[in-house]
Image (tube, rainbow, N blue to C red; front, side):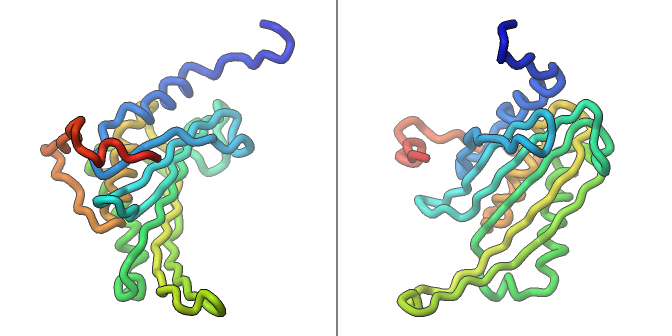
Length: 198
């Protein structure tokens, strides 16, 4: 090893980070690698996703894997997943007082459906309303749901957690999740949707 070289990351982190990319995803979802935050844990990896219907982007999200061999307060283990989802919603939905608990249940039910064992889950659900003023007064009012959550996965294989996060984004975007015994059909090579640039 030469001066300035970094030691390789621990094998446990490498295996977990690789499993972020192993999950098969629905054709409405596009995944991409993202730069990971550097100050939250000694090792980190991140992916991003967008949910599309036709050419309309309905939801976006990030999933960050944090690894600290020593663990951190509140983690209950060396791994922590941090998720973010933002989706456009109709105003009447975002004004529903039950939206917060319902949106949180989308996450926990998706984790349970994919048998993604976890502990120490916590997060927030935010409703955002954007109104234009001045020279933007004619812009339509938009309403969004934002969910931020973190939890500690029980094992290194995170593919079930990625699948649950993708299901959460689809539900937030108004696309129902697939039943557990049904697989999404891949896009055909001649499908123009498969050529969408990121």
